[in-house]
Amino acid sequence: MAAPVKPPRPSYRQEQAEATRMRIADAAQRLFAARGYGATSMEAIAREAGVANRTVYASFGAKRHILSAICERWLERADARGLARTILDEPEATARLRGAARWLTTLYSTDFDVVRILDAALDEDAETRDLLRAKLRGRNGVMDSLISSLEAQLSLPLGDAKAIYRAYAAPGVYGELVVDSGWPPERFQRWLADVLVAQLLS
Image (cartoon, rainbow, N blue to C red):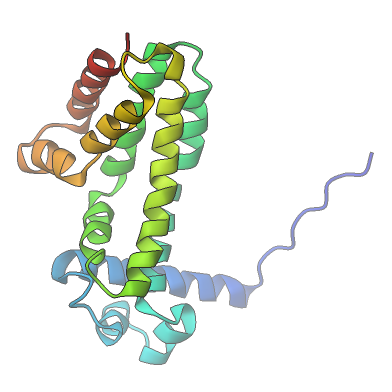
């Protein structure tokens, strides 16, 4: 059996281009969090990143594409997709539902600034809204799959169970309890897990 072919290593130029993209994304995230997405110009992002305006446009093309890159990096850091697969492999219903609380807490505690930026950017232009709605559909799809996997054990209709989980996933809930009231993320996770088990499982 032939050995698997390794993908070619990125060239130095490709590595440098990717490093520049990440520096621009980091700069944009700081500005989006401090000033708001709508109030931040591409020129301001270039100044914050220490690059020329043309470099920002060449790297991303439009501001919404920077936002998309920020979102994807956040999901990768949280291992959102891998964690969801691990939780879905849990054989016991209560453990899987507590895993749903862990998934949400991990996602938000990884970088809640990104959550707030995405939430605020939904008020922007139609193309940005379309991009963010696609991201939200992906997030909601994972959340729905976690609840759908428990359909046989739920104490209420599946649609209601999904709606309840999404309601607790609203950024304002985590923001009020963790950011504003000072709960550690671990406490939020335990509280959410207890609430979901009490409300959703028979």
